[in-house]
Image (cartoon, rainbow, N blue to C red; front, side):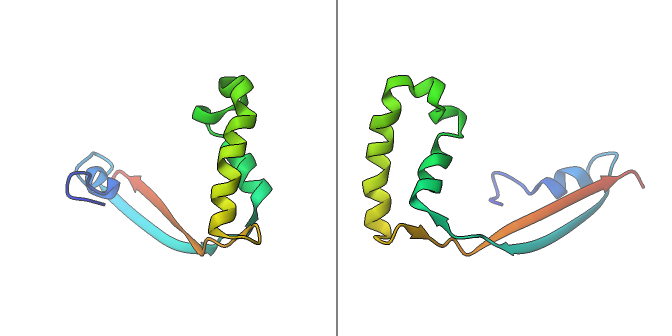
Length: 91
C-alpha cells in the first residue's frame, strides 16, 4: 500500500481489536476466453446491461477488437492472483 493509503492491518492495530494476523497466498488464475472476458465486463455495476441498454452491443464491439489485438488467439493468461486474509481480535 502507498504512504497515502496505509495497509488495513495498521489501522486495526490501533483499534480495540489490535491483535492482528495477516495471511497471504497466491492462486493460479485460470485462463479466460474472449467471450468470458467480454461477459465479465457486463457484470460490473458501471457496465451492467440495464445501465447500457442499447449501448451494450456497441460497448462489446469496442472491447473485442482491443482484446484480440492483445492476444489474437482469444485466450488470456493472467498469472497468479494474490490473496490476503486479515483477522483482528481484541487482546
